[in-house]
Length: 518
Image 1 (cartoon, one colour):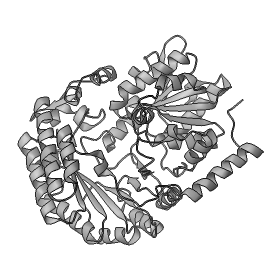
Image 2 (cartoon, rainbow, N blue to C red; image 1 turned 120 degrees about the vertical axis):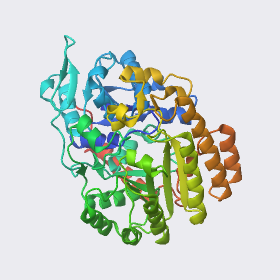
Image 3 (tube, helix red, strand yellow; image 1 turned 180 degrees about the vertical axis):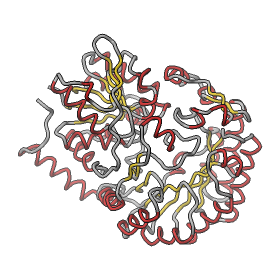
């Protein structure tokens, strides 16, 4: 008998948030699910044998995410291993990249089904009903691409596009229950050092109202890939409930994915009223500058707030090519407003490989960081710079209108991207060059900018001299732990976890626990 109805497998190191919502949705419908983050296991232990684990797993179906294209090689290789050891078990793919390349993906022999779009919980439930029953009409399942026994590909209409996200469970409680039930912690860990840094993602929206030209999740990309004409938001009150429920599990920061102002200022104010008093750290993305009045509201509701802002360049001409129409004064006013009201940290991100951007412009961006660090010299402003790598996202304006934006795209199929990932360095993996920089120039200036920024961070006390020396020696852009936030001694709420675990054990001993479908 299978140990689960559906087993989610993840090849890259951080599995997509959709795994947790899909698992919870299926569990509520009576299915039993498991998650195995293979890459995190491999990073934690060189002795871990992914193929051996796959061979031992028993499920009615396997689900594999192909969200961003860097997952392409690993996801397809994992699917091939599944078919080697479980040749009769269906393999289901989903995610942005799977949706974009669905008609190519379905023709790989290790792929049986592709679910398209940004919200596949209900189509997945319907597909699992058919798989468990051993019959059913696949043609009636929305968003599904599949092959019949004759090898003919069928593309069902993409009609399941929920208008909001309030029907989903997004508080990780089901994940905790599954860990206890399956007595399996390591396979559920979202990323390698999550045990030490248990950050929790809070999903505010699917889709986007902004149309940043580099983004595979932009408004135009969402229309193309998911058929979504407007964003689907989670209600602000449910967002606040999600954060409080997560705090019952983890003392790590709660990272709100998506600018809370996208749905309008009334939505943002409702959320801040509902979340007021939250004791943990709240990390908020902003896509546009903010003013002092809004910063004060953030500080009042979330005293331990952190801001993540990605204007991508100091150069207004570059930002205009990204559909970002604000000036440097607005960037500095935003930083000043947030720091003045007590923001714990302000992360600022620039990118290499953009339209109108030369190597000189990249290095001038580091000079601008120096100006900012001199102005805001109290250790809370943390700048980062890195390449648009390894791929320009399919669905983005850069990819779909590459000539207009000055890009030369070298990979146009899923297979070309999969093969590119076998190249020896990230420079050779890149699927693009720009009119202003070649691959060689981008790689060279990325390293030079990284070195200069590394030295700046050491000079202004943002990192230790030891970390700076190690980064310089490895010639990396930054030490990834720089992104982590301090949050206290205890990573988890141990009494609450014990209480939740005891309830699961009680169900297993005395009934009420979910079993696999008969």
